[in-house]
Length: 67
Image (cartoon, helix red, strand yellow):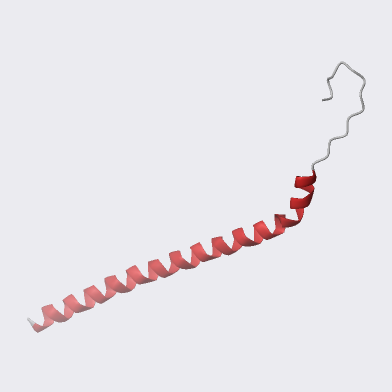
């Protein structure tokens, strides 16, 4: 637009972009919530795997002691 050969005053407006600028913070908020949910689910899955491994070791120790 700046390199046109004609001397013309052109004004560009973007009404959709102007209308959506208010939703930028909502997008950041939703992204933050999703990141927190993924972190909590990852932490819970790690705790579940650890507790299953400990329970398995405890049951096998009990079985070997009884034998």
